[in-house]
Length: 486
Image 1: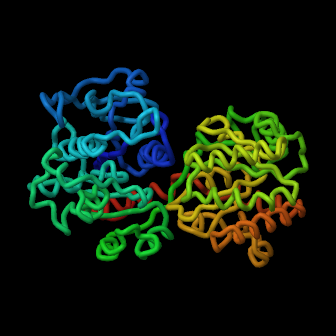
Image 2: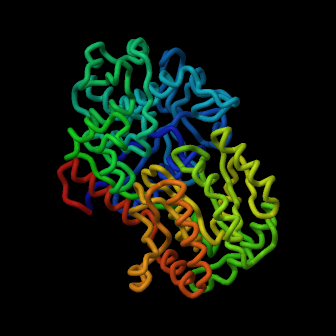
Image 3: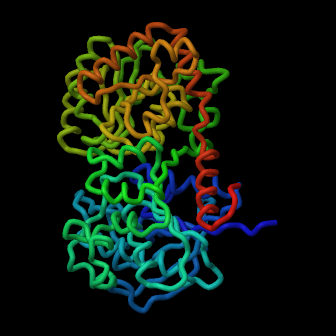
């Protein structure tokens, strides 16, 4: 029997312990999916105040007398089926607020130091800091872990292979030059082919520069970020390293997202029996204060309220919803102007439009299980998870033709409908007119119940699990080590 491959996964959040977005879902689901392919994952994350009480049987595996300004230690633990290393550095992470911001929404002023510490701990563990543990691969997720490949490179000597996964290129982690000495990188690292990035230290740039392999979360997004339009200033570096860049589509945890057993739903359902979705629609209408109307086309939105997600376009396209008699249920939080716009729309159309500002996991499940269609009008979208949940739950996705949305939803054009492969509505350009046209197409399709049910069923048949993506990650790891694929 071949030995199992050891991977250290490094991230700033992981579901179900700590979550602000889709990154946590991916980092939390991938270890279990990889296990079937002979890959054992230990995930390293900070020990935030909010998760300290959720962990039991944590034990110290390394002590630091002084680590980035204070005493720290590495703990090992197991929680929710996940094997964990936790960076317990109270001076950096034991505080109220989310991982990145204060309770008032302002970025922690020492984030550069905090996540450099996470990356430094990853590099040290990668080189054997923890007795009895030596990973073959250090897999870094987003800018918060981006310095780990740089530390491993500048430390010199033998080191594990590294993978850098970009979940969203828009978030890059840029900090002033005078941080360099604080975070323990040598002066020689501050060059264009090092960590320097437009006069600052680029954490994500460092990961892209030094990782052995770069992945992002969909094939289409991997192609898009090679262009100036989507490359966010990093397209030149990415083009130079295009030979080691690939896109692996995300999956979702199909045990967490399982309409047959989902306790957040008013009524479970399946592909064979979608009838109970009607009870979920009624429950969603009641919970959100919408008019009880089984015949109204009910759209759901589960997202961060931001320019990237195209929610300003949706506000401008609301007249198309009004004209068609549709309803809208929005779950999310974000830009104050967008929240104000949706609040005004809901007040102006009581019983038709409703909003919940914040995040509620059970409500997210009910929207997926009760809405007729799910809107994802993003201007750019590395992968997107909400449309994968929608496919599984029979909420027909209405998405822009960008990134992973284009990779995962098949437009219900005439040819796709006739061929029986359509799974949703895909639109471009990503403008108010483009979205309005998509809403009108959705309403027209909804008025043809038999065609609508076929599109819905096609989506529910899709494999949105981690099985395929996990195998591709396992193959990538093995290729780095010179082995055959699994």
